[in-house]
Length: 106
Image (cartoon, rainbow, N blue to C red; front, side, top):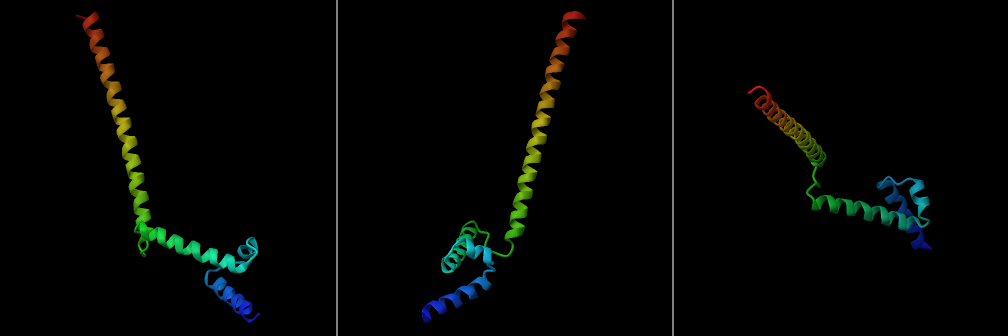
């Protein structure tokens, strides 16, 4: 009984530490299991971020920079495709105009 009381105290301490509300504890009937899952999830997320090099304080800025870089790449790709398409259309129209000129006015 004493151990059970200590475990429940530990659950309350960890609950406050990890900002767990009652809904999170109600989803899983055993509050000890809920706390263990919460701790494991947080540690797993920290490990995953560390593996990709996003564990430091500048991680948010890094993500923002990567998104900006990808957005810039998409813009360049879209503009390049549009420019190449326009150049091909103008080239084909020029060939057609030259063909008509040589056929009818020469």
